[in-house]
Amino acid sequence: MIKLLKYDWKRNSDGILSTLAILIIVQVVLTIVGLTRNWDEIVLVSLSAFLYSLTGILLFINCCRTFDHNIKSYSRRLLTLHPLNGVGAVIILSWFVMMAVVVIAAIHFLIYASYSDWDTSLLKQPELWNIGAIMGIVLQTVWGYTCIMVAILLSITVARSFRVKGSTWIGILFFIILQSVYSWLQYLLFHNNKASIGVISMDITDSNDASLSFFSNMNINFLIGPFLMELVFFIGSLYLMSYLLNKKVEI
Amino acid sequence: MESVLQLTNVTKSYRGKKALDNVSFTLSPGKIIGLLGSNGSGKSTIMKLAAGLIQPASGTVTIGGQLVGRETRAVTSFMPDQPLTESWMRVENAIQYYNDFFTDFDAAKANEMLTFMKLNKTDRISTLSKGMNERLQLTLTLSRNAKLYLLDEPIGGVDPVARAKILDAIVNYYNEESSMLVSTHLVHDIERIFDEVIFIREGKIVLQDEVENIRITHGKSIDEMFKGVFGE
Image 1: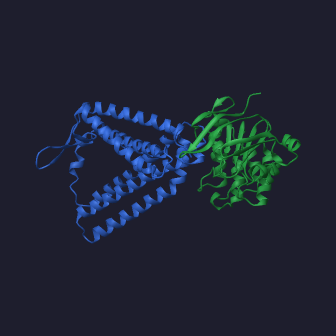
Image 2 (image 1 turned 180 degrees about the vertical axis):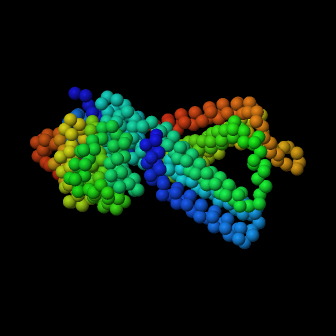
């Protein structure tokens, strides 16, 4: 898997590094121009966050395209490795690129915060830096990200299992159905109407004013059931991908 | 003697069109076999089936008695009609790639072949001509110590000089303990290397025989025989 990752990286490194370099340059220019021309701080931060998100999405798409390229490539399909090695290599690559974007954003934030007149006393409260809670957030973010990645890679594999024009649409339809079935089952089994993103959850109320409220819950017991269901979907997706790559995806 | 490659009643269709129709044949070890047929006759489909890249709709494909799959790829070296390499690579990267992933890859043989083929290790693959690229693909394929070599149109689209070089390389570097299946429709240039030929037309095997038998029985060269069978 690591050897495959090495070759995925060699093929993509120019594109990834140049994208990150452009991101840094644009962020620097944006910050300097914004500060010298006294732009509204909210506009500046929003624009900056948008650029980080856009870069993250572009690099994520690049990882998906790498997988799509690999499953159609003779150089990869003729190897004696189990097909899940290729899936694992792309997932690790996507972790690396996302980590790079997050690290750049974090450094940017620290530099910006040190030069701005923000009140950072809130960030210095020791109870905010609970190692367990931070680890929980990180693990859940990585897990959620990996699950989404696997769902997309499975959809690409399903699309490539059909030798028909427009098979990409089959993949998109499969992804939508997969996500819908997952959400429906989650609601059915756990009556969960919260769009959970880790320990921070978004509660959608049924009131007429359609308000949203955010809350934090460090008790993670309520996540065990959904996590097990995610795990079942995750393993099932890997199994299906393995079957399709061995038997159905032809080049 | 155990067959190297065996296809039994293999059928394969693409979008309802039959590419192979109930095909059966066996390859014995130690031979170079020509798989001859016009464009669209099903040659590449047989190659891909043997390489484990596609699955038959019905019938079985075995290599050394084992159903084709991931395990048989370890003893099969396939040169498809499209590059085995990636455009970002240099020649040395391609050699390293094979060395990294195939335990039967012989780096010394690869280096010897590179010299024979007049390929420079530092050359970028994207800058190689079609003929030089074919030479590289053949170097990668033959540098593995495989049981079965599958060459799909190895001289297709290359000039006569490159053709001669490729055929010389096949003869010089072919391991006589293994078998080699070579698909082509350019029979005249390549017939000198074959021990046996299989003629395929519209997905059906129309002839399989030793080259010597054909020459003695029919009094014709393989090229003449090919034109007789496939001529319109």
